Image 1 (cartoon, helix red, strand yellow):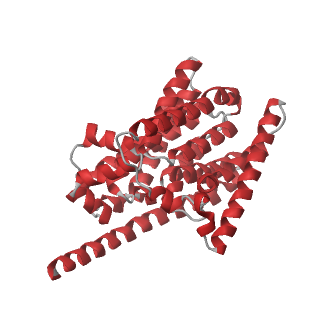
Image 2 (cartoon, one colour; image 1 turned 90 degrees about the vertical axis):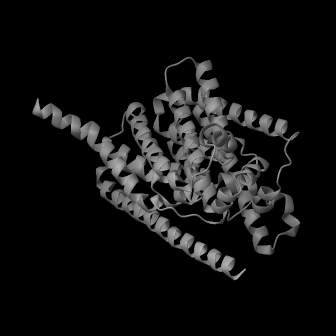
Image 3 (cartoon, one colour; image 1 turned 135 degrees about the vertical axis):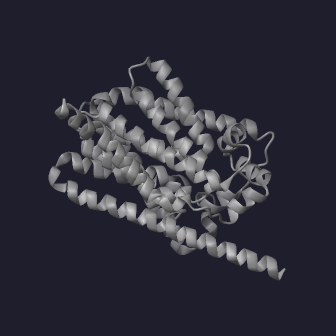
Length: 368
C-alpha cells in the first residue's frame, strides 16, 4: 500500500506540484500592483480602451470584458491570470501524457513549464488590461487541440475546434500563427494521429479563419477600423517608402516565404506517398516562428506577437530533445531554469519601470 501511494505521488501528484510551483514562482513579481500608460488609460477611460480594441478587430477582448469583467480592477488581474497559467500548464502536461506514447512525466512537465515560463509570453502579459483575455484565448487553443485529438465524430470535432480557434482569433489575431505552429508540433509528435490531424485540425483552422474574416467584414458596417496595425507592422504595401536595409529585410522574408511554401508542398507530397517526413516537419516547425514576418514582411516586429508560436517552437524542440535521449535532459533542464530566471527578471524590471512611470506622471501632474 505504501509503495502504491509512493508511485501515485511520484507519477501523478509530484509533476503537478512542480508545474504549479515553477509557474507561480516565475510570475511572482506579476502580483505587484503596477500599471503603465495603457493600463492607466483603461483605469481612467474604460470605454476608450474597449473602443480601441474594437477598432483593431479584437472583438473577443471586448466580449469577455462585457460578459465576465464589467469593471476593470488592476489589483486582481494577477490573482486570476497566474492560476489560469498554472491550469494551462497542467492541461498541457495531461494532453502530452494522454496522446504521446513516447512521453515521460519528466519531459511533459518541462514542456508545460517552459511553454508558460518564458520572456516572450511575459511580454504579452505585460499589458495587464488584456492578460485575462489572452490566457482565455490560450485555453481555447488547448481545448481545440484536445478536442481535435479525441475520439468524437469528425464533424463534431471540426465544428467544435473551429469555434474555439475562431474565438481565440477574435481575442487577438496572432493566435492564427500560434495554432499553425501547434498543428505542426502535433503532426510531428502524435504520429499515429497524423491522418486525424489533417482531417480535423487543418479544416478547423481554416473554418476559424473564415469566421474571423466574416465577423471582421460584418463589423466593418458599424466600426471604423484603425490603421495602426497596418502602419506599425505591414511592410508589403509600402515597399517604395522603406529604407535600403528594410527593403533587404523584406526581400529576405519574401525568399524565406517562398522556400517555406516549397518545403511545405514537398512535405505534403511525401506524406501522401507515405515517405519519411520527420526531418522536413522539424524544419517546418522551427521555420513557423517566422510566419508573422512572412505575413507582414516585417523583419523586427514587437516580441509579444510571437508569444504562442515561440512557446510552441521553443518548448517543442526541448521536448523532442528530452524524448530522444536522457543524456540531454540535464542540459535542457538548465535551459528551462534560465528561461524561468529571465522571465522572473523581466517581470521585476517591468515593475521598476512602471514605478518610474508613476513617479514621472505624478511629478508632471504636480508641476501642471
